[in-house]
Length: 326
Image (cartoon, helix red, strand yellow):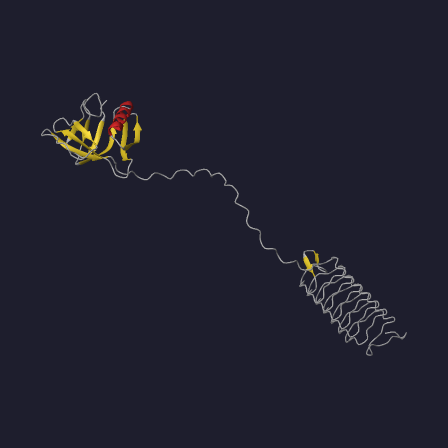
C-alpha cells in the first residue's frame, strides 16, 4: 500500500521515508511539490491506510481542521482548511535525492536545510470546490407563543335608534329606503314606514302593506298584483304605470296620488280617498269604488267599464248613471 501526499510547489518529486513525521509506512510513499506548496489531496491504495495517514496528519497540522472530501475502496481524498481566518503555513526540509521531508513545522523558518535538502512550504487551505446543491427545506419551526393582548379600543358611539326599521328578505325597510327593482313578493310589510321610499319596478305581488306609510313614495311601474294596501297612506305617492290588479285598497288614502295609466282592474277601492288624484288613462275595469271620494280627481281617458261607483263622490266631469250614482 503506497500512500501519496500531493503537494503543489516545486516540480521535484520527493519520497516520504519511514522516518518521516507522517509516521511509519510500508513501501516508498512519494510527494510532488511545486513552489509554495499546498496540500490538495492524499491517495492510498487501500482505505484503512488512508484513514491511518489522515489521523497522523492530524497530529502534524496543529491549529487546522482536516476535511475529508472523498473516500472510496481504492482512494482517499483529503484537503485542509484553516480553523482560523489566516491560513496555516507549513515548512519542511525536502531531500534533493530521496524526497524525504524532515523538520516539518508551522513556525516561521529559522532553520537551514543544508546542501542536500531544500526548504519547502505550503498552506493548509486547498482550492475551493464548486458550490453544492441546495439542501432540502427544513421542517417548520415550532409555533411561537401567542403575543400579549392588545390594548382595549375606544368605546364606540351609541347605536342608531332602529325603531320603525324592518329587515325583510334582506332589504332594509325604512323611510327613504331605496328599493328599486327589489323582490318583495309576499313580504309582510304591514305597518312599515316607507315615507318617500323609492320602490320603482319592484315586485310586490301578494305583499302585505296594510297600514303602511307610503306618503310620497315612488311605486311607478311596480308589480302589485293582489297587494294588500288596506288603510295604507299613499298621499302624494306615484303609482304611474303600476299594476295593482285585484289589489285591496279599502280605506286607502290616495289623496293627490299620481295614478296615470295605473291598472286597477278588479281592485277593491271601497271608501278609498282619491280626491285630487291624477287618474288620466287609468284602468278601473270592474273596480269597486263604493263610497270612494273622487272629488277633484282627473279621470280623463279613464276606463270605468263595469266599475261600481255606488255612493261614490264624483268629480263634476264624471257622467252620472241612471240611478243618480257616478
